[in-house]
Image (cartoon, helix red, strand yellow):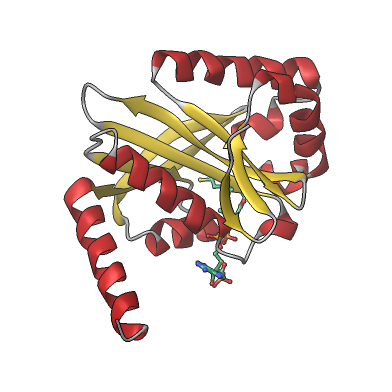
Length: 195
Ligand SMILES: CC(C)(COP(=O)(O)OP(=O)(O)OC[C@H]1O[C@@H](n2cnc3c(N)ncnc32)[C@H](O)[C@@H]1OP(=O)(O)O)[C@@H](O)C(=O)NCCC(=O)NCCS
């Protein structure tokens, strides 16, 4: 199975229906950490529920409208990333992320999403990459800012978990902005290494 190495012992791979047992156990283990922010933490309680979500994304992948990746750290499923939406007609996609508490603070999401945006912009011609979050989710907002995204505004009362409605903050980066940022980072690292 193909894997993208993010760091020593950290790999990003497709998370597929055959991972249902492992994914259900992972969600169960970190449910309290995810529940305020991630809808699937309130929906997945067993392997059948996990399989339903993973199959939905396998279908989206086949239709080229979404993707779902798992992040394994030292062999344990410890988070993931997704293209929640991937619309090649409009050139707009939306990224989502989560990590287990023990995997945070190492830049794994920054690296994983950087690779995803490189692929979306460089290989798939995407024009706009969105990140949607609850405005109270400081860690998520910091991750979007770290990726160079711009905070565009708030969609009031637009998101429902259970019986409760929440605002959604929209962040995004455009393809030209991404390419400029990547070029500047490459030049800065070449200067730092004396090349
Ligand atoms: C949102 C979430 C994924 C962010 O995790 P994170 O660990 O902050 O993000 P990253 O993996 O990019 O790591 C960044 C952190 O690692 C540090 N870091 C270390 N090495 C780094 C590197 N090479 N590159 C970037 N950051 C690095 C950064 O300083 C930062 O830590 P800090 O915020 O204490 O300064 C995590 O808080 C989470 O899973 N929350 C619950 C689910 C959730 O809210 N998902 C988003 C819904 S919209």
